[in-house]
Image 1 (cartoon, rainbow, N blue to C red):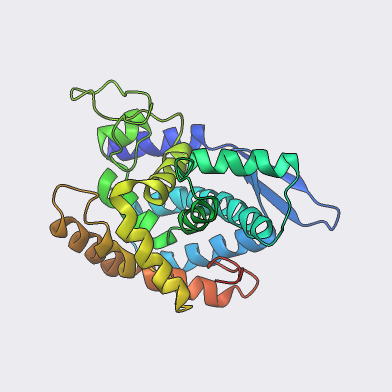
Image 2 (image 1 turned 90 degrees about the vertical axis):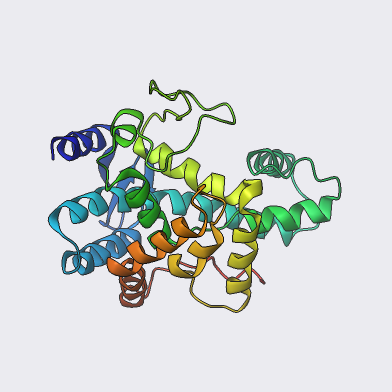
Length: 271
């Protein structure tokens, strides 16, 4: 219990939350300096009310801390995706647009693809959302609902190793990455799934679901994270079990249904 309380204290210290007023009087809330508009806050509030009925006190406290950060991280991906969609509809790019596009190619590791059209197509597949319930489920499973020493000491909710230039956390194995905050841990996890070689099949299956205009859920995508853990299918089966037993997937879908102004799936950009 003391580990969980300490974890919540760390979260409270690492999460930057400010309030400001728009000209229309609506409130904007910022997480890590990035604003979430009223429709996103409404989505979070609705989902939290639904989860109230399904989760124990410990799990609920964990989810209420993590969820706004996961929504925030997903919002950033959506901004990148919208930028790319607008760019792909144009014939000529400005110097600023070329610079931003080059940065995205480096970030998502598509800069080594020689064919420009092929590189853009691959970049479009990589810049996409991870279902919120899958982010929450993996965070819960990998961190023991926020109670593991790695989660508390390293701000590392997903057991991410210190590859790709990440800082090393002072743990016995010396293999665990250290993150500045829980927020950056979540953002890196999303990036890792979106660009990692091991998760190509995961991304391809996600694209198939989107092409059919079906709703992305963690239950549908979890089986394709077989390379995330050495436990292979035992791990993916546990992800599905945790997601289902805590009604995370159905809760997310219900919250989306109740919040008509909030589009969780990527906007229609000609997919």
